[in-house]
Length: 311
Image 1 (tube, rainbow, N blue to C red):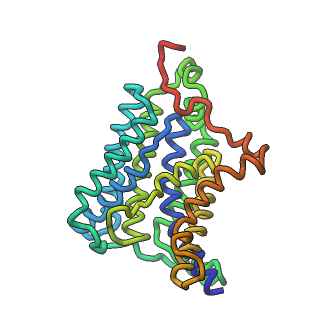
Image 2 (cartoon, rainbow, N blue to C red):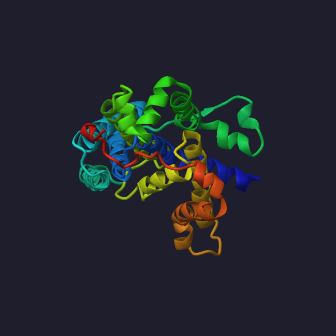
Image 3 (tube, rainbow, N blue to C red):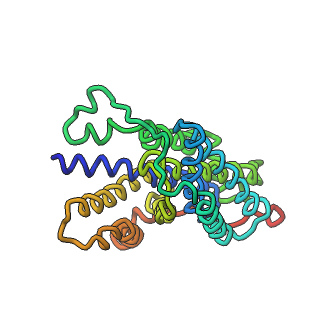
């Protein structure tokens, strides 16, 4: 029982990083913009969080600064891809390289330094005493509750229960038709891509202020790419992304526990588990759940720049 509780506790923490980044990517892809810069945004958010709490030891301040940095770089990315209609894949890769490089450069003096302030656990009375699940799900920091419940609920409500959400989805499906109906396609794409980038940077801050409370070169370790894959696995749905992130969190936690307990399995193989899980998540549904795959197709306008003159 203790082993299962330990794995679930680590899984919830590890999955939170992926869930927040994936939720940001859901916003971008729902309006038709493919952002491959999540890895770079997470690196920038991670180092920003550490630097901010070093200057002012408050984790909320560090997280807020990371969101602001994400907003800034997200606006640059949106300017290039939405306003100037540059190639989304190339811009995303450029953002990843720029963000990762900048993070390494400005984070040199902070490498290995523990965070001056981290998010503390909030224990939910009674629920935290539940066997097996109590400590894992109801004895976590505030970001965990926000990431697994509040943020996906808000995004789901806006996207699928409001008129504005219908307009947002129309922009991602058919921007020309949305424009004909008077929907401000460029403005909606710009705003949602920028907000999505902020969540990506916030995921980096969560990584360095809650999950691994320190910064080092390579601490993001490909989580941005896994988050992008998670969005496809989740069918571009917020709660699907959260569920997928938790699943990957379990895979990651099993790897950690296996290494800590010296299981007779190669540590290299255990470290590879999240990436192997990503490949399986992309391949298996194609063969096993055809109906599910058809229902979870990408927005028709994903990756397609909008040119008003071509209506």
